[in-house]
Length: 347
Image (cartoon, rainbow, N blue to C red; front, side, top):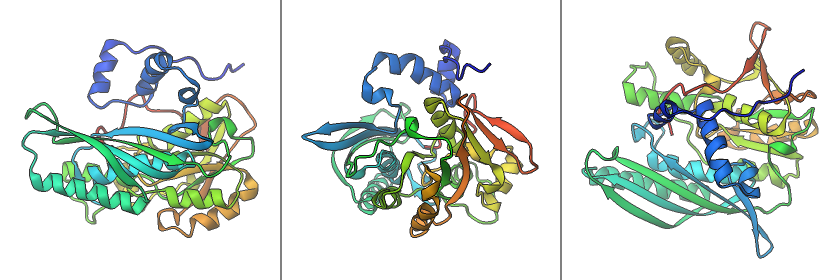
């Protein structure tokens, strides 16, 4: 008899030290579930979505925040500024919200070259314009040299939901299909290559991009959309495990259907990484009824950021809250979160 997901065990001090040095995965989940969720418990937070949903004067709004500490701060396909805007815009999109306004908080280490700061700020403005959002407020702090790591950025965002759908893990149903918007792993490999000078034959660029446009098109089409998740820290695997555990539904994946570029796969095989755990900054999953799958693929195909969308799995009738994947050779294995992370400081 399977009693479903077990309650997380509390972290010990050594694990908290590992978290401070970039660990995450299952340990980070335990930290959230044993410390933050009980301390701040409320209906919005308990929904465990990418942002909080609430009403103001009859209007449904979404609100989210995230902090960005990527190393290095510049990488092929983007930088920490691009990342900070797109990451928050994408969390709003996963709530089904049109992004409106952002805040920006910058913690700058003394000695950061002005040219670098100008480049980051320019990237933030450009990314906000691309996403249709406006940076309307913020804060700047400077810390002593050696007390930071060049620059950290926090962004918060607010968006409007122009529909009445309730989107979240609890809404998924048996038979729903899982649509992945594109190939996996390019952001993580781009950052790794910039950090360690891997000497790749061809440069791999991050997939960092705003996702609101394809999401809003899916919603405008009236598809029976149940859940959305962007695949950032912990990648596809962690996102689906979170959805399975929150919903109590099992999810089945087909490894052969999951797109990974040959150059990314080659780096993964060389270094022992699993692409389904790599961070992405321009990829998402949509879980929706099978009847709308063909229309969803057609709509996503109109947008460059999601033109490679594919169906990679479905929601099962069983209720253990687990994810299983059929491998390329036909075997089945359980997919879980990593105890830590494959790579630190990716986003």
